[in-house]
Length: 269
Figure 1 (tube, helix red, strand yellow):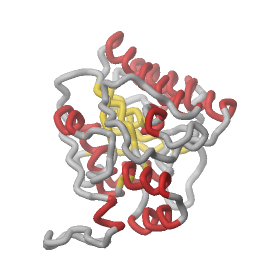
Figure 2 (figure 1 turned 45 degrees about the vertical axis):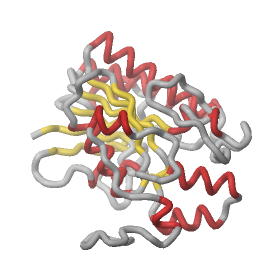
Figure 3 (figure 1 turned 90 degrees about the horizontal axis):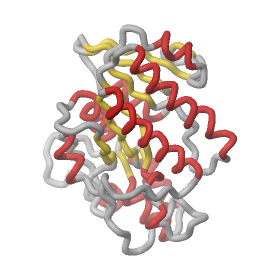
């Protein structure tokens, strides 16, 4: 049995991460910033290095999702959890001899080249440039800067300490109804971003499972976690080859009312 620790387990992505590991093959240990009413989690402050080292004792894999998640956040709200907390997570993983860390990076680490305006990070120009995992970083916010830092920290620990690291650039996790509502509230540039960056709950689970369990031919790995959107510009080819992630959902199909047409037995949502 593989022991998997999940920080940020009570967040939106964390809840999908829990669902990504059903059955008896994995023993999950869940951590969150504070107690959750509907989940059995252990409260932890990731800026407390000693606490994090103790918490990861006996674990095999860490899925590190804990962070201040807002692209609008100011630096003082980000530097503790998104910088010091990331260092603590990798250091705790090494001290406990973990096999792998899956680090929750973000599309905001590479989005600046495609924004409609530098002050509107969740927008996309009409004809965006394709972004591949090994392209130079292009953070669009201070939040994006912290995610570039986390990817760099993962690369250092992979090469310096030999721990397996997958940096997963997560798109915009929304339910189907949430996607429709987001698009209805946005202008054209905002809608293009939503269509490009949507990550369905099901594909989120697929991405996290792949990042945590795939056999890695290279280390570290940077992977893109968006759905198979017709309007995406985060390339999925390299991610399919590196961790075997193959998304099945498409924002365009949801928004245009054509989802799963002709695909018998799949939930339309």
